Image (cartoon, rainbow, N blue to C red; front, top):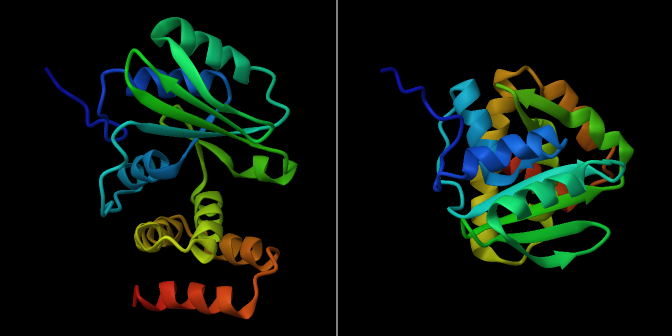
Length: 193
């Protein structure tokens, strides 16, 4: 019997079911699981393991079926809602002890970064880089900054493989970064040379 390589590192028997349910409800993977999936798809080494009980998703604010995901997952696993705001829904799936966050985005322009890899909804490496870079330049947490630094390098490797540097440059140039942020970006790029 042939066992296919998993699409991403899985810690529970429920990870894939949760991700496929999310895909059916127009929720797109973000975070470490998304980077892991992209690395495996584009044959780029991922320098770390993804968080072991954490699945993060993005959705646009006009997604009419995100509540269906919460109901379906709740019926299957039992959930407690840790946080529910206009911008984020944080769930703890009690049957699998998995934390699931849904980022609700009101910027309609970000829908252009929605993609699918092997039938799984995942945000593009351009979006993942941009959002992680925003966190990188604004965090004071040293450990998070180091993790983000290496994740950003990994995402740049994926963007290089997909010939996406022009799109990344165009997207970042519209973000209005100051000189300090531009210097930080140049340091990440220089570290790869």
